[in-house]
Length: 454
Image 1: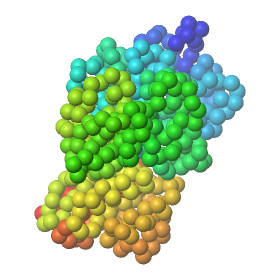
Image 2 (image 1 turned 180 degrees about the vertical axis):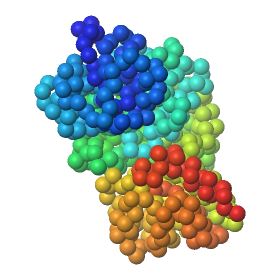
Image 3 (image 1 turned 45 degrees about the vertical axis):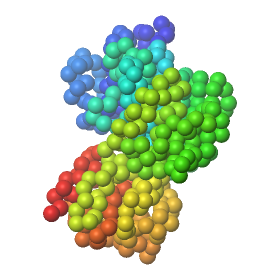
Image 4 (image 1 turned 90 degrees about the vertical axis):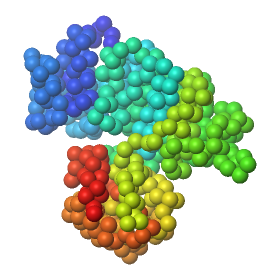
């Protein structure tokens, strides 16, 4: 933070976890600030009033006057730059920043930055566990899911660190000017958040900001959208499900009849030793290996992590087997790409067919890429949520359709539809906020309904 800004008013817009972390940051630095939120009861209100009883907070709307008086607007990721009051303030010359932008100015240790449509949390958690194996003081957070995860600015006050590993959303990157990560990656890109972005090009452009100032970059050879649009990094790594092209590439090869993870021509470990299940997680494992190697984590520690890490909840998680039917919780499948991966992963392990529970808030996505997988692997789809009708119209007669008004009803319908050897998969391809607090809440409700089956 520059000295010129020290005594000028910052206006924090949005009072969730990120907004609260920004308030803590400004308070710790003696910088005057106020907070505003369009809601009358934002999620972090009680904590804010306890920690900062004397600070100004404006609720129930975005005051144009307050925004125009700000020396800078600190925008929470859930609020779009296109929000009319924000857009007008920008047009009048008020600078807008976000917590990741502020973090990048303050952080002293190297940063591993990870974004993408799917797999972010798994890769970030793997890399953090790899670092911990060798005693690296690592802080992990950003957009990472979970109640214990920390916003980036709170990480700066969590003790001395040797390394930061951040999961970053496109929303966070919109207000990030120059991240200056040690290494950055876009794991993949599939349709998502098109209720916020005018096009996939705009969505991709937000993701591309992760590469600004990066000293090293990692590229997924299987997804052209992971390529940086502009060169400039000192070193480039790659990974993919093909043979490794060189010593800066990770890939797959066959030795004595089984698949191996490779770095260049070096055999690292058999694919079967990876605890994570699914072909997509082989890619996630290679991404984590490349990121860890780029910051100096020894191979032995990274192999140990890959052998032991079972995966995160709500991601193709096998809950139970009952009367020959396996039940999988993939509530984190909030977009079409994630659900496609889930269907294919479960199909690899399933003797029969899949009964899919899907639906929710579709975020204006194109669901048509699901159709080939539905026709090939899915015998019945149980639809829930706000966009169930949209999905039903698209699916037509390609799979049997059923409707459910609650998750309990959906699970009962799915269980009655499944036969010995089949699998019931919750992978909604949609956001959860029409019926649930978030995807984790949706997954917990599904899990409880599955456990209640007798």
